[in-house]
Amino acid sequence: KSEFRGTFSFFEAEMDARAQSRRKIEIDLRGAIQNEGLRPHYQPLVDLTSGRITGFEALVRWPHPERGMISPGEFIPVAEETGLINPLGALMLRRACMDAAQWPDDVRVAVNLSPLQFRTGNLLALVTDALRQSGLPARRLELEITETLLLEKSSQVLATLHALRALGVRMSMDDFGTGYSSLSYLRSFPFDKIKIDQSFVRDLGANPDAQAIVRSIVSLGVGLGVTITAEGVETEAELSCLRAEGCHEGQGFLFSRARPNAEVISLLKAQRVATAA
Ligand code: C2E
Ligand code: MG
Ligand code: MG
Ligand code: MG
Image (tube, rainbow, N blue to C red):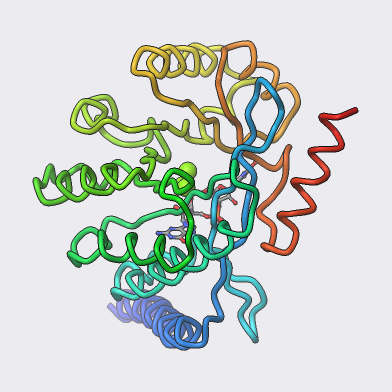
């Protein structure tokens, strides 16, 4: 009996510690959003035929004063539970558009949206304002959403997606293949881009089935007239396999990690030298 009670309080203590650490993240995150202590870093998207950078994905970075860089995997879920994802997402969208407006005119920026941002009802105004204030043309903005957004099959969500696309913004489906019925979602909305989840790319060398899956996603993309981007490209072997399958675009540590905006221009210059050579 006492043994049982011991186990019970162990779990209780564990849960308490976890709740406290989430609470601490929430408080610090609220402060960081207010002081603009969060910022985007940018990871290149590379055209696999020409080798040129077509754009950059904005990924939120949080340099925490005590803990160093905290990974989005740790604080995005907290931001989503607490509603802080709305001011966070607004901040990222504004900053990404402002930064990208200073890049060359043929370079796009991709921004991740959380499903919660579609529930507040002001997403369309947020995007319109970010474009207007930065002067970034809509065609240079890509918005990445995941399948979870389309799970609920809400007509309000679909209406917002169509309105965003009518602005001239491009829509991407992120982490393709990890949801429950990825294919049916492609029928409900005309995406401009599909991003193959990195779990499929990771398996390319080792698992022959992974190559068959990549091949069919690429042919799906060609059939639908949609750009296919592979996420998480880490090795030359993965790259040559993706090229062989006709995948259009790649993103991953092989090309570059996400870098601060100050390094974007030098990444673009380095590429210009490489393609000229
Ligand atoms: P995501 O949108 O699928 O972004 C790609 C993630 O893969 C990024 O992780 C990126 O750093 C990582 N990655 C890129 N290349 C490689 C590679 O070659 N190998 C490996 N192992 N990883 C690679 P990150 O920055 O930690 O972000 C994780 C997730 O957090 C993102 O996944 C996205 O879902 C979310 N996130 C990041 N920034 C934002 C944001 O501003 N708003 C929202 N709503 N979500 C965001
Ligand atoms: Mg993404
Ligand atoms: Mg992804
Ligand atoms: Mg992801």
